[in-house]
Amino acid sequence: MLRPATFRRSRYSSTLRGMTTTIPATASTPLPHNISGDGKQRRAEPLLDLFQHPDSADLADIHRWLGVLEHLVRPYIDPSAPRTRREDVRSFGQILEHESLPTESSSPEAVLSELAPYFQGMMRWNHPGTMINVTPPPTTPAVAAAAFASALNPNGAQDMSSGLLLGTELAVVKMLSQLAGIDVDRSGGVFTFGGKSTNMHAIKHGIQRAQPHARREGIRPPVRVVSSTQGHPCHEEACGWLGIGESSCLRVPTRPDGVMDLAALENTIRTSVAAGEQVVTIFANGGTTIQMLVDPIGDIVAMRDRLVEELGLDYVPRVHVDSVVGWVWLFFRDYDFQTNPCGFPPATLSRIRTQAARIAEIHLADSFGVDFHKTGFASYVSSIYMVADRNEIYQQGGITDADHPIGGGGRKGLPHQDLQFGNHSPFQYTLELSRSMAGPLQAYVNLKMLGVAGYQRLIGGLLVSSQRFADELTAQGRFEVLSDADSHGFAVLFIAKPAVDTPSLFGQAWTRADLESIARYNYGFYRYLFEQQALGRCPIACDYSSGYHKLVGGAKIGVHKSYPMSPFYDEDTAVAFAGVLGEMLAEYDRQPADQSPAGGPHEARPLIFRPGSLT
Image (tube, rainbow, N blue to C red):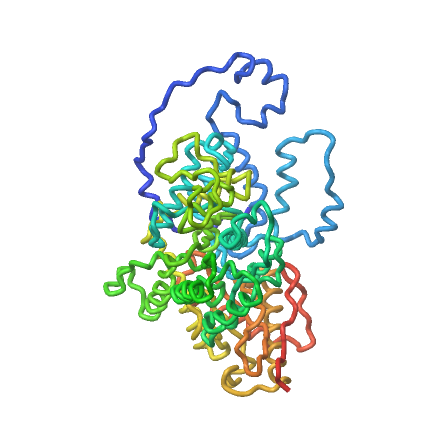
């Protein structure tokens, strides 16, 4: 039997000792005999054993079933590997051939035995070698809080169902408002089903500003939203889901450094308005996935305000910061860069200072998004849409002051300080009528437990280790780091060079044939690493990215992407992993040229090579 990995004890564990509750215990009233723990009804229906008895607060059964499931899943977990083992190589279609709805009941042990194999092939985000995307391991106390609440099945639609637990959402809104520097007496926020939903909310609120009656009467005239070419694809997708059409998302070019071209933005807005359209929402990047680009938020807001006056608009287009990844830079907004209490090296400190200054302008925007399941160390789904004026949230359900300057009337939305237990019902204005409390609870636990200093150490530590990884790869002479100059985040983009003397991708005008050769060499190395993962020989799970855009002639090739998010990814690990990649590249070079990889943990990505204007 495999033994689980042994990790260092949490530095926060000592703070839990000796804690006492501030809520006094009260005597419980015994239940009627016919449904008590030793009553006849309990013995007559064995299905009742599947539920927590109402005469008990004991969650021992849940602990027991967790233990059973852990025992069944453990054979698929190799502590040295970034993925759980995948022994079942069937397709989903083949697996489903053996699934059907049973007629009779089954024992929990039997069902969990059937469930356990579905845990094959999963990423283990706590493993330092898991570096395929911006997904962190959740803290265990946050998971425990969400699991405990799940046993009580609260619905965050109203306090009558969820009790005071719904107050954790309000508390997170307040803490994030303080973090962003916006007025906590006016701000608001709602947890929702993901980053795409935060952007859908931003478009919806832009529409209701321009057309207050659209909620009941529909949209007219046509509306447009603006995003840069570096903006997330979901900006267009959200337009499609809202029914205004993906073509309603106008993409603005960027400057050479990747941020939005403000002259192009102004021209796009003027052209759209002249065509009789309403530009309702402007998306500013608040930290893109790979390069962590942050647009000039203050300049965009100032331009928006100027154009409202110059064009005589009777509405104010919304400026929304898509910061679901980059919001964590807000933890450094008040960092003492002079004394540098965390002891970050100069390169890391400079990167943090730059990002903190850029994201600090978020307080000027109308709204922004936060994904705790991306950079907040919570599990899916934990996304919140934040607004500077909570009345805009109330308005989407018609719960606004009649004299509000933006809104269309309706019932009054209570300020948070006036909310009393029994009158807090988010279902009246949220998209969801069924609302999980897992997101607010995990966010609350992490914000309170880690605090500003804890997030600073975690995020800064990942930056330090990421830079060390890039430096080690460069020092070997067989890799070229592509993202070192223009990336301000954790991701490292790199290519493998066929030889030490292979010229830099930026150092000469490549021919189509030569660049395609580089692309195929790196694709082969990606497939080799993929194969070695499946064989258990490679402890690193990097990704093959969709391409790098700044090559000569507009050419684009697939590159390797390392995106570390595990707190256990330290500098020693970064050095070791760079060494592993060097060894794997040497092995790859010794493979016969006509040898095809045997396979990988899943279907491999296709080769990426677009020659652009190269000949």
